[in-house]
Length: 467
Image 1 (cartoon, rainbow, N blue to C red):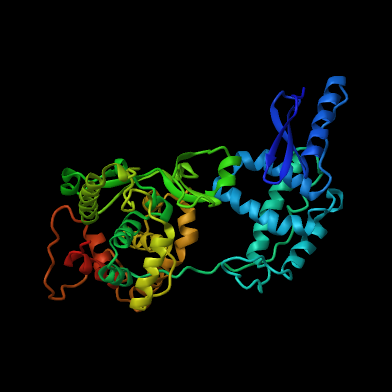
Image 2 (tube, rainbow, N blue to C red; image 1 turned 60 degrees about the horizontal axis):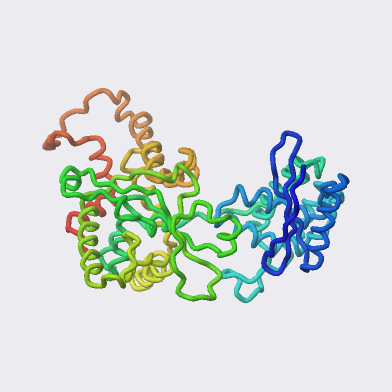
């Protein structure tokens, strides 16, 4: 059973769209793309005629480009989020279609794919922020992204009966080494906070560090998701709920994906912008979380809220109130580039390591792991990682220092015979015993005090940091 066809314009192309049904009666949209409106109209009439006489057969893809069009329209539109859509479409249009778009599917096997990957490494890369002069070549990281797309695309082709075997499944992909992110220590972060003169960047430092936020989550935080009442502050139970994020995406992605998961589209400052900023739901359920924040940070937020209320009252209707915590003077979300630029000013002025904004989140995870003695599940709850092992895979290297300490403890205790039985009480050294107040975990306290970087952070916080 096949519906009547329709025509829809997509950019400079014309698509003939009709619905097909498989043997189980499940409907799927079929898209055929043509360069001219006349060709699309001709195909539409052909589809409808063959339907009326019962001779219509759904055409199968012949080339890689035809398969990719089918893959994007049937699979990508349903499965991809906005940033994934933009990224995959860019990779397809910049690299895959120009190189093997006209290649016939029956000519593609595992050997072809592996040879293709090696040839890509010798090809010039497209112009980008990392290749402004267009002199660079395609990197192994880009080849891996291409491989991910082709492997998924060919998997769907096998499922649809277009190909018998996925030629990318066992293909050897050029290896690339992921650069280890440099992060700030507690002393570096405290230096940045104390010398920061920008109110918004200082708030961002505090929130990203204490609540382990991504920048989009920071910019999407709204006041209805912030619990900073005096009662919460006094009882050390202030918290924020992360359930939204601000993201800049292409207008085409909004159109194609039919505003999936979008809560709010913010007005554009320029009419000819190809992108828009949106407030949207997180891409995974695990990203939705409740994170407790220190009372000191809650007080800073309470002060910010009172200041914002005064601004709203003064501006009246001129203030576009989206209830955002990180809002401009007129209510719109702060831009990512604004915070990054202000952070770069601090880095340059103070001579701090040149880290990216996302490194603040890494610093947060690092010290939460250290403070908790490696409580990965607790840290995962704050970070919003889908799996606990993602925390160990991404951040496990930061615990090397503690593991080295363990080796030294065994060296001293066992091989130097200083403490063969750890349960035995050590002899009295004459040192004064420190009394730990009730309700304080003595073991956790010692871990903090024995860490010079954390001790520096606590010392800085004790001075009272204000915004």
